[in-house]
Length: 313
Image 1 (cartoon, rainbow, N blue to C red):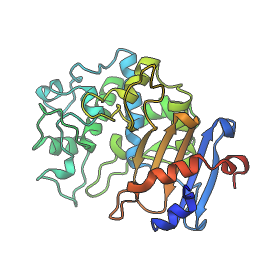
Image 2 (image 1 turned 180 degrees about the vertical axis):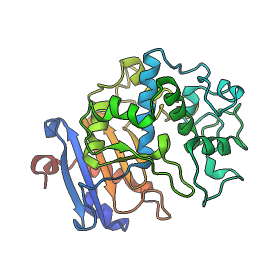
Image 3 (image 1 turned 135 degrees about the vertical axis):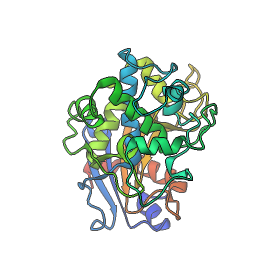
Image 4 (image 1 turned 45 degrees about the vertical axis):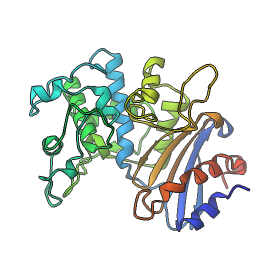
């Protein structure tokens, strides 16, 4: 018998979780429920969405590809402060799928956790020790810092304005913004600079994956599957939970769900349930307890909890 969402929290030592679901059974509207200690986690609070920023940046980059202002597999546009031979060695596809050969700037021998870095500073540090001929997949914030700089170069606008115009305003994400959250040893920007709410994030994932309103079909497919030649479950700004073959006529559901994580939050789209779920926990997913390792049980306990969508608990 499957465990309940509440039992999962207890078993993993998690005090609370807030969840927002959007699907056919909610009438396409966000419905919120709290699990565990309701006083621990405010479901309406704004918080740093961290790496969930990456999917937003990837979508903007793909929109610019659609407009002919960037290319997926050609060299990057020249970036001020970055050597031309460096941008010519990179492609947007490799950056978005973390297969560029760039190391995370925090892994560089020049990194100092007490230094305030600009995105360009972090890229320069990340380039040290990187092998841009490598297509081995390795998750690194530096990839998206480069993409963010490229978006600013192509549009002539700050990334914060680009995200506002292309995503936050059209989707009525009124509590979401890209902030200058640089602090000692950390650069947010295109890798982790968005501040949002769980409801806004559910609206974002619903528009992107359930309603498919942000990208044309061919680039939507790239979003989901475009990194597969480097890593089996990699998209371009998203990951797929295997089985992740296809899609083919024989395999109409080529993955269990598409997702991205950020700090203490996971966004999920489950095609077989026609549902988007935004979930935030009272502890980080990847801390030393690694609650992420058993999270599928929680995801599907929530997805199959039908009284949740009928009553809102």
